[in-house]
Image (cartoon, rainbow, N blue to C red; front, side, top):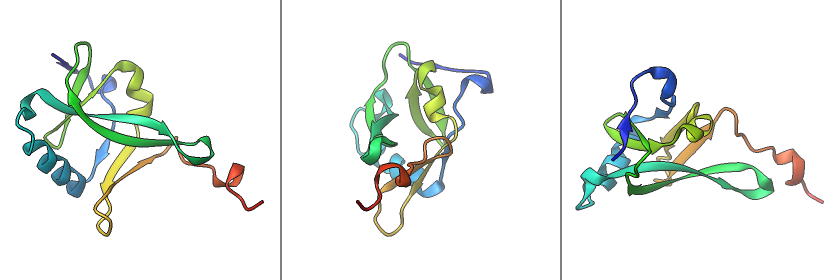
Length: 116
């Protein structure tokens, strides 16, 4: 289905915290067909037109590359590399929700989110 890449230059540098990895592993283990599934990071437009991220659990697709981060499978295409490289995924201990932080995609709240 997907192929695992060899050279590090072809793999995204994603920082996945231990807590986030545990949550993702628990979700994956709940799925009856877990061996066919992987996570995909999807960019979405948030307020003020800035980029935010969400995570989907999906089947591996032909042509996708698979990278294993802390025993969690992530799928991506080569076109996804700029979005994934430098992404940090953590678990908010208070809300229990995943948080995505990217060094290149930080929202600019001064651009349009100021009081009018």
